[in-house]
Amino acid sequence: MVDQTQDEILEVQTKNKQIKYAADTSKMFSEWLKQCPVVYYLSYPVEPGEATIEYVFDKTVRRK
Image 1 (cartoon, rainbow, N blue to C red):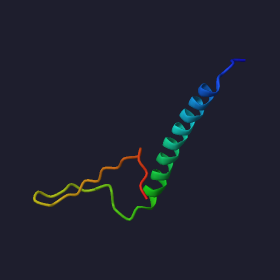
Image 2: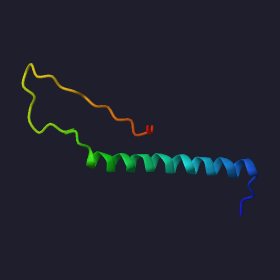
Image 3: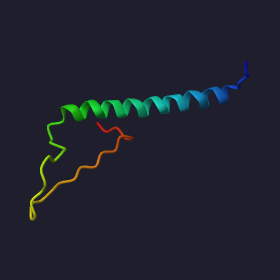
């Protein structure tokens, strides 16, 4: 068994928390997107002269 110092253990725990946070954020975003009231996919071509709105989502940051 590998002998780890306290610093190495904390580093591994921190890395695991970061991985879990990113996975949870992605999962939460996917769930939210299913319930989102905004139509985020255009199933028809946009006519010339029509205004469009583009949404950019960042799954790495959580905002309240």
